Image (cartoon, rainbow, N blue to C red; front, side, top):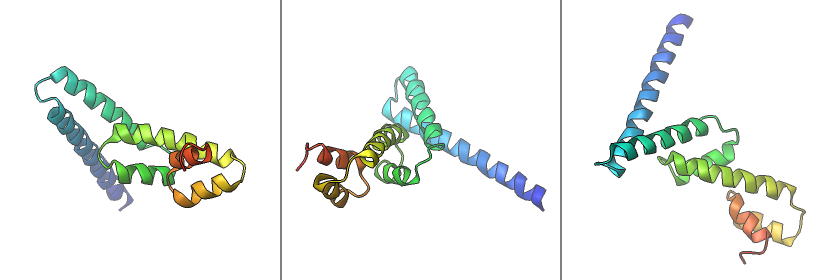
Length: 122
């Protein structure tokens, strides 16, 4: 039974990988229908970002970016990295009224928290 489940899981994971690759190829084609080089470049960028996002370790930020950019893995990666940097910054920031305000206004958006804390947003 365990052997069957492992086989089933590997088949499922393989089909999921093929599905993602097909989805990314379609996105690249739709963006550049007449330019195979651009399609290949965009596909490579998106596949790299998808693989990156499948290995990230912060579930709160991953959920945030997945919700805002559900099929755009390149944007997910970019925003994830910005959010993670801002989260680390805010974790190290000293407690004050600006930090409290930032946390209250944007509990899940660390870049917005950082802007408020730094006094760039009111």
